[in-house]
Length: 82
Image (tube, rainbow, N blue to C red; front, side):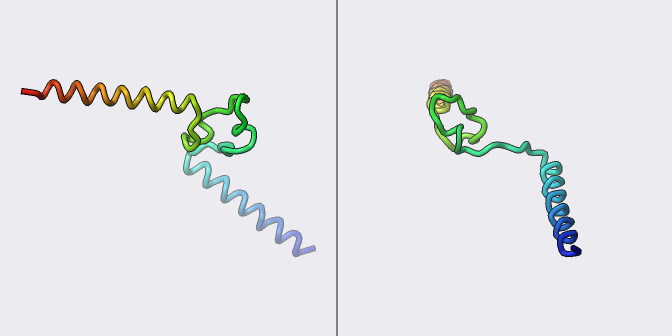
């Protein structure tokens, strides 16, 4: 019986330490990139994978940002031309 009680307290200590680690780091607990979020058409949120998985919505956003960056670079080059 003492082994079961000791094991319970060890597990309790580990879980408490993990909870304190999450609280101290200030990060939210997130879902995985697989499972239902990996199925097209179910509307899995892009923020779950933090951009590791490139979906159509993210591709479009990245293309828009790249185009804006190119326009800024062109404008900067044109303004420095003597």
